[in-house]
Amino acid sequence: MARRRVILGLFLASLGAVLWHAILHPDWWSIPAALFGWFLADAASGLIHMYMDYHPCPPGKRLDDIFFFPGSRESDEYLKMQRARMASINAFERLVYDFKNHHPRPDALGRRELWRLIGSTVILAALPMTLMLDAAIVMTHVPGWVAAGAFAGIVGGAFAQYFHGSLHRTHNPWFIDALRRVGLLMTPAAHQRHHDTLQRDFATNCGWSNPLLNPLFRMLRRRGYLEDSGLVPGP
Image 1 (cartoon, rainbow, N blue to C red):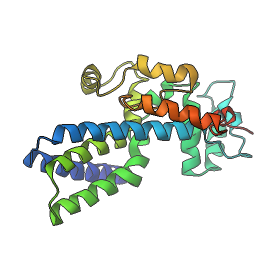
Image 2 (image 1 turned 120 degrees about the vertical axis):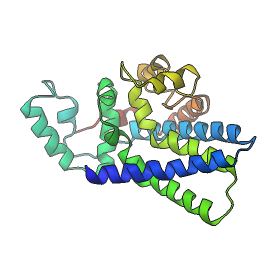
Image 3 (image 1 turned 90 degrees about the vertical axis):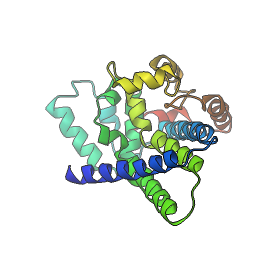
Image 4 (image 1 turned 180 degrees about the vertical axis):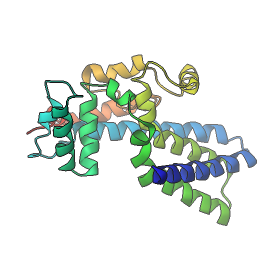
């Protein structure tokens, strides 16, 4: 727990330094750059979502036992089985399973704690990117509009799964509702279109990139990729 707090604190501090640099060096290009960074983060959320949804779970791990478990998921039998199955796969494979498990049980995503939603993204991508950007700001001249765009993109990328989870919660912090009202985050109704078919609207931040990602998905399907068999784990 202490390690998580240190990592999250370091990330927020380094991200805050990027924002402060953007504020200290205002530019007319800052707003377009920030919107473009937000768009790129949305597109990244959609591409990752598309890949994870259809990437097959590892065979031979009997993950279907817990995916299709007929009893209570709070029972000792299920929890013991879940721990055993999850221990048999690596961290990436657990993420792949989680994306598939989310479809029949979408509200489970909304109940997850913040760190489980953003921890891997922060450690693997967002924190290294902010630290490198902070170093560049100190050692070179980074225009304010670049910092603004990078800030928006990193926030959108780091918190993408948190924003996704908010689509499956009834009660959210005030800023989620505020961002939805101005169109910077998508609504649960818009995201429901993805769950209705699992073949469209994979982006989960604002959905701006879905008009580009939907044709990409259809093209990949025509070429034999993203088969339905990847949507659920096998034995």
